[in-house]
Length: 142
Image 1: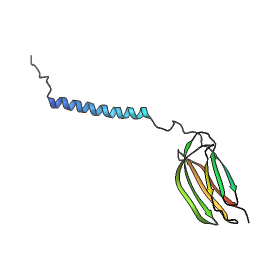
Image 2: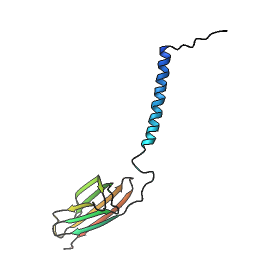
Image 3: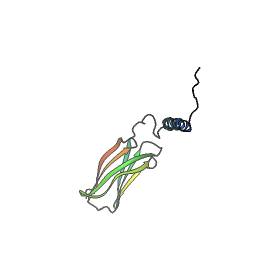
């Protein structure tokens, strides 16, 4: 009967340990990623609606944009404000947390009597859905 040598060298054992460690690391990463999941829910919530209120005062205009929910959610806001067709202010992709009790307030101060003011606004939710898009023109007609 022929005997076979079943001894392993240090290099062979080290190679097997490294291979097992690599496979374990990849499996751990994959399983860990699946267990941690995403911050976002499995299903996207129903799209919200916004209510708008605009108040025209002698010295300023105040626009209020409120979502129809009470919890704070992240929104991306972009708007341009014009006075008699001249842009006086803008913001692009500003990230804000809003709720019905904590709405977006855009105030136009130093209002000139007789001038026409316009705000073009877009609001996107955290899922990149356009949830509000409007042009609001304010003028006292005088």
